[in-house]
Length: 147
Ligand SMILES: [Zn+2]
Image (cartoon, rainbow, N blue to C red; front, side, top):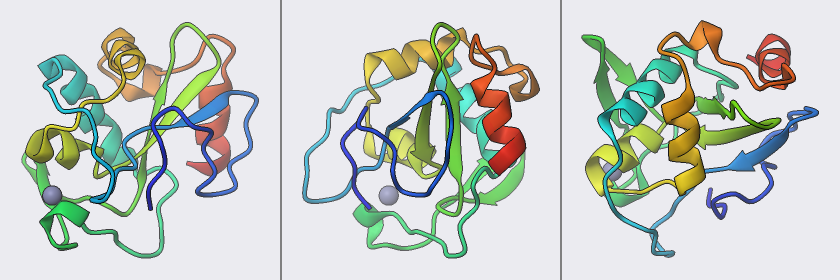
């Protein structure tokens, strides 16, 4: 499943007052920006994965690794990626960035570089995902309804 970064999210039927924007829905046939992002931003992504938001029925493998299942270590726990989403709320507007949980693997192993505004949103978030929200509360409503 491939969507352009910052396009409107449409993969599942989430309803929200916030703008839901795609990030990290990459695939093999379209090149993407490569680079590295601060460790703190990666740590925020890691902390969102155990929430298993909008969990899917199937598991998506990594298209760059021959579609095999991707496991990663989060806090010493072996975790399967590709079966849920990561939701990243903006702290300055009613925007939630929605990525596949494989985002972590794309960043770590394929040097995928999210758009600057997404990195900034990650860096603005507190450590504890229970305290994440958009200014108007759309993120927590989304989690309550679909998480
Ligand atoms: Zn891979």
